[in-house]
Image (spheres, rainbow, N blue to C red):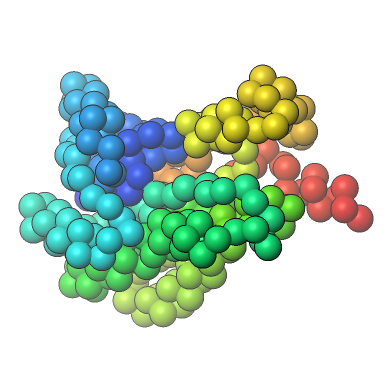
Length: 262
């Protein structure tokens, strides 16, 4: 198992859900994983599991929305391993489900700080290391809602659309430096983040889960490992001719929504 053998890969938000699945899969495929998160207990637990299975990983506590923490952490990772090969910008929150005219400035800023500033800061402070190494790879985790509008979570959807266009801009800016930048757009992935939404849903946890399984063209929601395999592909040299691309992992929901709207 060596699809990303010896690559130094940073995963933000690696302590749960998609990030956790990505860390475990990347390590299994030979990567040296730097797991970044604010959740110390969960982050260390995952690293211990990876190491107990013969993988290589280290936990770094970091708030990705605070620039000096990002700069210090990324520089420390580069110093420890001598380089950085891949950055996975995965950290994110959903925010409040309010119509636009009811969102407060602080509620809007909270989502943008985590979902957008984190991508900016991590990219900003990793790019110099990529340039020094002669190339690199960034994978930004956006969302199906970065492509498709729905009448809920306006701050979240705006933030995910921003990540989509940041991806394309940076892909063009740094192509000359042999730095690839792609985005992944998950649909409904049954992760702790979506479980939180289900618990808060007016329809109730069980009905929410049943409904969102039913509306999927494949008949069920995705799992974090479904997105982790897409991350692995984009992080590997198998995708060496891909940049500025959008990889949708949604069980066909995007196409189904488009068809239903015609």
